Amino acid sequence: MFVIDKEKCSQCGECQDICPCGAIVENDDGSFSIDKDLCADCAVCQDVCAFEAIEEIEFAEV
Ligand code: SF4
Ligand code: SF4
Image 1 (cartoon, rainbow, N blue to C red):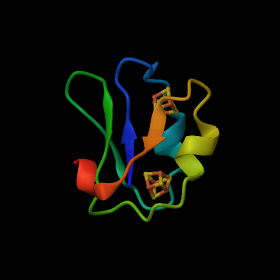
Image 2: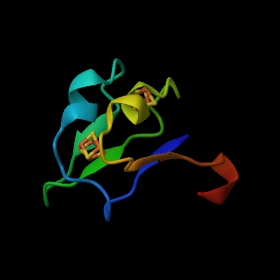
Image 3: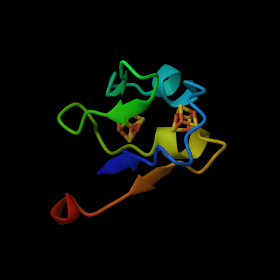
Image 4: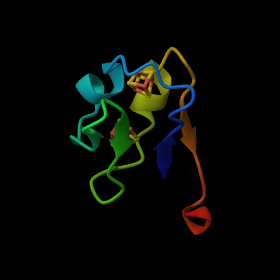
């Protein structure tokens, strides 16, 4: 699964625009999160993020 590192994220919204599953949601504070129930693990968001803020992690770590 993929997670967004809020420390690195610039809140540009590029990943939300490109996610084919609508899995990236904007939070009330302007930060972005990935809904793991919607995410298809396609990695498109990771490729588009210019800030390397999206990391793939093992499900067991969550
Ligand atoms: S593309 Fe990267 S920097 Fe932009 S909102 Fe998504 S995670 Fe944050
Ligand atoms: S890995 Fe794919 S489905 Fe999951 S949040 Fe990123 S772009 Fe969306």
